[in-house]
Image (cartoon, rainbow, N blue to C red):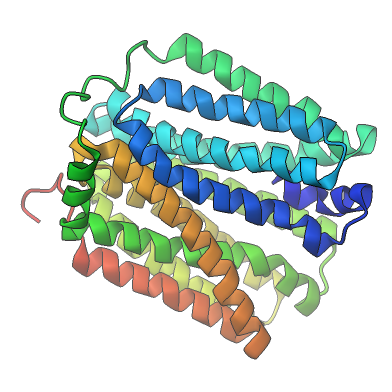
Length: 369
């Protein structure tokens, strides 16, 4: 979120083009995929609370490094630490949710994690422009990213029980066995593949949706900001709602129906006649994706309870790969065709995700399935 809002200013400071400046995101994503895979190793060897805190420390160091960066090379190196932070904190947040909460409360906790991510985006999109106006782009790293990461570190130290994440260590000592169990379990493997496809759809929409509206309906940046705030708020509501509905409606049905409906909305919105109607349909898609993310993560986390840390590490890696696939696939379709066919293509990936979840995965918490 920080880099997206401040990319132009960062490029001007270091006298590089926006396209070149944007490579800080690319490099950070590569680092994130690599560390997500490494986290599967760490998760069977080290305390999960400690791993979460190492991720938060990476954010702290990154924020300080970006604020002090004297050159673009230093900026890229400092920003790449967010990839480490993202891989560790998100993976461990979901892993700890599985360990701290009983199964009947676990989905609600996962929903709150997703909601927290969305709320932080909403708050940041309002705070960062204000700080940029006061002290330039560096102020956002110093006065927003740095203190919020420090607060998170303090809260995690004070509230997460000591020793959490070590209770299963006697069973979770063999990484090879963990991978073998995951890749030999059809449901576990295809739940990850289904999530990859869904994330590709999600990222493709996020990447190109605003550009479509600005070009097609000539909306202003202010209108685009309002649209993002509304969509993010609905995503938050969807995440929390899903966390409360999962145990009643089922993880698998909720994940399948929500991504199918969202994909159909995303395939249709670019053909609608007015911005208001089109934006309403997309915002409904945001709500459904909030529902889907919570339901799908709840389904994935229950696949192999003995190897939750490894599953969540792999899920973080495939999520990042999905992000890359969505942006890249959407970009190719846009170059070859146009916005409308691009969004149809992205929607097809979501429909494939729904098919995978419906026909190739099982919910271990539903014995009669």
